[in-house]
Image (cartoon, rainbow, N blue to C red; front, top):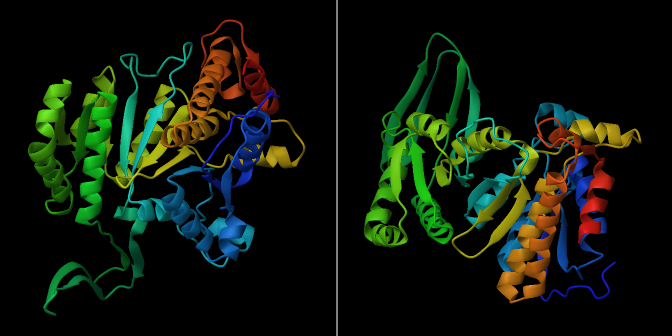
Length: 401
């Protein structure tokens, strides 16, 4: 126990979650934060039952609170499918809370691997982190879709400001039924995405790549490409040259080939779905999904920190049986430290920033000295390894503090 707790002046928004990560969340607070920090937070329960109870209003409220206070930290949450609806007796398949929050905050998600000595990336050439910048609005996450009967015709209808309509046939389902989807994006969000990526690249002194598939998607993806190119030429080219960093665009399949051959050390900007998929690929290739930081950065000055992984249901079922689990809490721990550091920066609290830095160093040093959870023990090259359960690991972190 710290003799005098570190003070906070402004709350952070705390978004609780589901299953095993909800358990990890509470233990991190109890063992690693509350003994040292006079924690001020505005709490929102984003557990699936409470989202169902409030008709998902709690998710909207938590996003609006983030606008008010500027900094949020979020636990992993369930996005229900049909099986989850039945499991929890839900009213319906609620949309992804992450998607809802990201749409309200209009942000870009930056995901970066936590580099630890003794854990070697699966791609030998990767020597430095590769940061995924994921556009956090629209596309498939805000899409509408439906099942189509045989004999139907699907059309894309746009009603223009003067009332006239532009009709494009998507597919004539004359011989067979099928499925159809409509998705969208907006210029304002794409511009915010581009600006945030350029600014983040300048702040981190890292090259910026952007990839899409404009050769196939000649209007949708090409719009992204054009907005990035125009903003770079008009606002950021000179700044990038002065900083000694570069920006370039390439097709997404070419980008993947380049990434696999690179040494790392750059930001890879992706559309929403690409960023979702590639961030998991990079996290696994660098070591573990539990070793990936994630922060939503809004051009309006809002920040939301979270773990990049899911709710770990397999461990949760063991936990419910009373069994100890060797659950890796590092990504969730770094979500908390990221939020506390940003709160400290915004409020001018050097002690709070220092605490976040020390917590991260303590965590990394612990793993590098051989004390780790079971997932890391399987891939670590440290010779003298000690596998710890969740409580043991967090207690060790607190002891190093």
